[in-house]
Length: 192
Image (cartoon, rainbow, N blue to C red):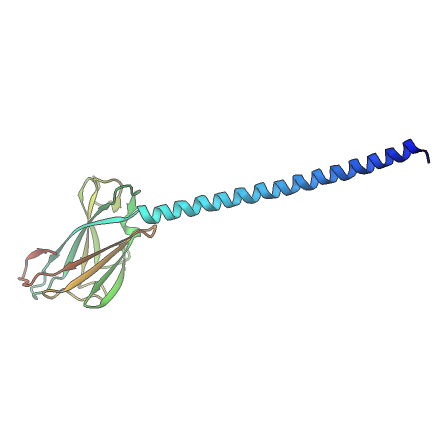
């Protein structure tokens, strides 16, 4: 074999090795780009969920207790709710609430169609009285809890502490504590 032919074979071999290395590098780059895209999408979804859990929170304004059964105990609890600043719209019927009275706690579904003892009343900013969605900062809705119909919670005696937790559908949690008055008269309402 002559020397130019041997050099040509070495050059072709080198070219084949070079093309193989370029193909392997291109495949590896494609895998890395695909993995980076998947990780970026997952990180974005996680960030959106975390932001929603922190920012989509129900603000508890005040609670009014009513004595309606003439037994000297508060049996209806009206809690006014609105959006915290920066929150997206929150549908209260998809929320859940925890009521703790005298150490006994119960979780109440916010869906008034399936849960007895809860109803909603639009107070401010909402044209439709049947609407249970807080859409903007002007909306104010009162959730009414009938303690005689909710299982696991007793009516409020005098000087009873109530712990109330509102959990938005995204997981944002608000906690507030109320106390019933020192004296409860039949048929009266009290700011707790």
